[in-house]
Amino acid sequence: MDPIEEKLRCDLALRGARPNTITTYARCCRRFRAHFGRSPLELTVADVRAYLEHLRVRERKSPRSINVYAAALGFLFGETLGRRAEIGRIPRLRVHAKPPVVLAPSEVERVLAALATPRQRAFVMTLYGAGLRISEAAALRIEDLDSARMQIHVCEGKGGRERYVPLSPRLLGELRAYWKRYRPKGPLLFPGRDSDGRLSRAGISKALQRAARRAGIAKRATPHIFRHSFATHLLELGADLRTVQVLLGHSSIRSTTAYLHVSHARLARVTLPFDVLGTDRARSLG
Image 1 (cartoon, helix red, strand yellow):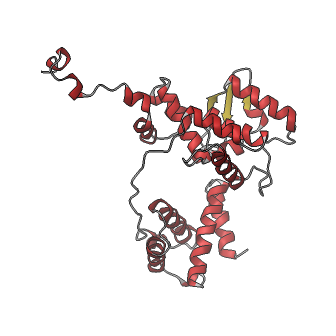
Image 2 (tube, one colour; image 1 turned 45 degrees about the horizontal axis):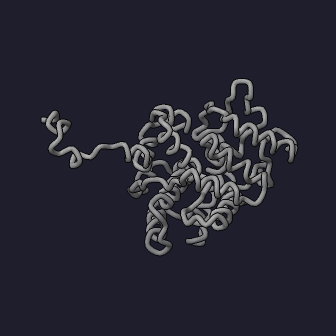
C-alpha cells in the first residue's frame, strides 16, 4: 500500500472514523492522485480545486459526491500531510436537499417477498423493522438483541453514537427463524465476506435492485430507502417528530423534519384555507 494512503487510513482510524468512511476517503484520494499522475506531496490546494471542478464539469458528479471528495482531500492535506493552513481554501458546494424517496407499505412487502434468499430477507427486514442504516445492521451482534426488554442495541451508530431501538415482536420471530436456519458463527448476526467479516453493502444493494425489478417497482429500492420508509411510516402511524429523531439516531431534528414533507397521511389531514372560505371556521380567523 502507498505510504501516504497507509498514513491517511491510520490518521482516520485514530480519529474514530468508521470503516466505510476510511475506505471512501482512501478511494477519493487515490483517484485524485491517479488523475494527476503525481504524489500528493507534489500537488497543491489549487490542484484540489481544479480536480473538484473536473468532477463537476467532466464527470458530472453530484454536489453531495463532490463534497465527499472535498472532505477527503481536506483531511489528506490538513491532517495527513500537515498543511492545515491551506485547507480553508478548499470549497464546498451547496447541496439542495430533496425529499427522500419512500416506498409504500405494500411496496415494502413486495420487495421483501421478491428477495432471493431468506438471509437477504432477514437483513432487509431488519433495516426496515428497526430503521437502521446498512452499516448499523451489518454490525449487529447476536447479543445486541434483547428479547427480554424487546430492544436492539445499536452499537455503531453514525459518529460513534450508541442508541436503543424497539425490537418488533414480528421482527424477532423472523430473526429467530433466520438464526435457526443459518446458525451464524461468531458474534455477528449477519456475517459476510467483506474484509471485516461483515455482509457486503454492494451485495445487498444489488439484491434489492433485482428484487425491486422482480416486484415491478419503478422506484429506487436502496438500503437507505428502507430507513426513509420506516421513518415516514412511523410519522403516518402517529409517532411524534422527537421520537422519530431518537429512533433514527439523528443528532439534529432538522435531519428528521425532511420526513414531514413526504408523509402523505399528514398532508391528507391538512385543511386548506381555500376549502373553508365562507364558513364559520374561516370567519373565526378574522
